[in-house]
Length: 182
Length: 284
Image (cartoon, chains in turn green, red):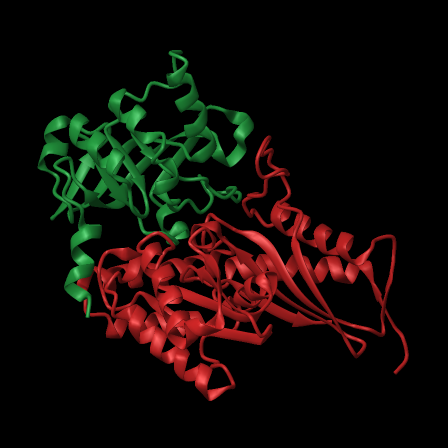
């Protein structure tokens, strides 16, 4: 199935999504990768407030290339998600509803997704120039000193992604390759 | 042969152009391989992914923008003619790094290098320093072969100090285990660079060099060429497919480079590269 969905995601949208579905996302996304996740995680551990409200949000693991004149953003494909595994459960427990990246997640992340009703999307790794066409504007929310790793707000229109792990824990990375394995 | 003088500015311009081209323009060997793979891919999702990658490469080339947001760490293999003298203020390494700096700043490439790897991890803001491997060769020219190496795939690479009794089966197992462990992470379909022999460091360097050999050129030793083909079939039988979403295209190529080694050793390094395998070369 292909669904056109608005961000932030509604609980009923997340409940409907099954691993293997295609989505076209429109609305606001937050971005964050290694360095920003580390900072957010350390604040959570210290019991401090975060500089950005992540409740109900979707985070896209990306560090875009600089934008050329006339472009809203430079190429902006997903980075490998497993590097965020250490930090994601804490963010999910604070109400994060979705993550977009590429590659496998560990059991702790999947457990936290099931516990909190969240979804893991994958964007096509390396299709950065193509994906950037669905990003209409960007704005730094915090951690400007991190450059490409700062937390941005992206406004996206029909951003293409695939549900790889749904809120029930179904994971097409674990099932699809078996159909083609010889 | 007489000494030849090359201006430092020519080195800067050459390196700058190589890294911009490397990031914008996909190699002909890779594009042909992706198109071929699309026709042979059994999974509809896999076909769609390959189609998006082909489209992505066309957009990047037409608009002079990077193929991938990870514009990589700058790696150069240099064959430096022993009759070349550099004229100018800069040393060879300074000129190379200046070329990298200008490419990444003026070419809208992402700056992805941090100063120290453990403590501060402060971005150097110009993607330097580059990794420069220099071989002194006879002649009056300089050959540059460059790669902008992304770390999604670099992180999935591995090295093992096998010993002679492991034999060919040990070599195969280690390579296949490394690819299997990487699974969907390194942006498949991948290019697998393998370095066998030498020392610990030499094997890793050979593996990197293997990733920048065009995938339509096989190892000149038939035994290793056959091993490349056998491993490619075995990897594609793993089923990960394009983007790891299932399919029969997990790798586009396996390139093996070798070097003599010690009587007690058989080092094997596996350097994994994403489907773009960005590299360019030129001679000045």
